Structure formats: C-alpha cells, structure tokens
Image (cartoon, rainbow, N blue to C red; front, side, top):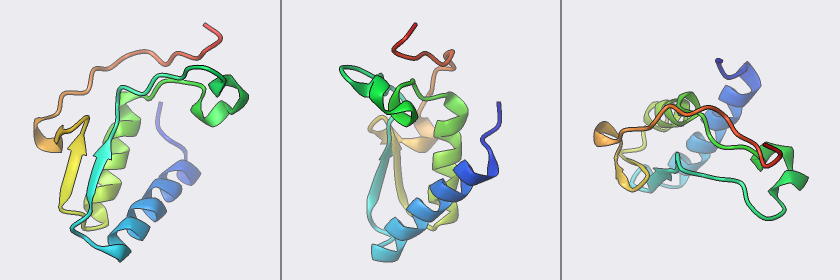
Length: 91
C-alpha cells in the first residue's frame, strides 16, 4: 500500500521545516511505535507504523538534506525495519 500524495507532502514539509532550522539536526524515525492507552481517540496514531512509511520518512529526510538520520536509534543505512501487518488498538 503506497502512501497517498497528501501524506507524502506532509512528510516532505515536516522534514523541510526541520532542515530549515539546521541540516545538522538528528532525525530519529521510530518504526516500533505501538498505540496504547487512549490512542484510539485519534485515528492518525491508533495504529502501528508500516515499513513503507518508515522508508518514506527516511526518503523525505534525505531529500530535505538532513545528514543525520536514524531509524530506531541506528544509522538508517544499517537499520532493519521488520515488515509487519498494520494493527490497531481495536484488534
């Protein structure tokens, strides 16, 4: 499942904003997010992250010129994001 154009634009704008402050800012993309507590109240955060979303976030950070990109605390080149099915709090 590809991200829609709006989601891609939002990621690109966020990373561009971060880069506009400084391209030396370290960005840590978290692939292990799990919704808990009252996350179901907010659909945008009431599900786990898909591997393709992590890859798109890294791509957006690279395109913005950010030089220090981590995935789960590891340099993105060395990160291994497990492909897992999307889950919600309701499952």
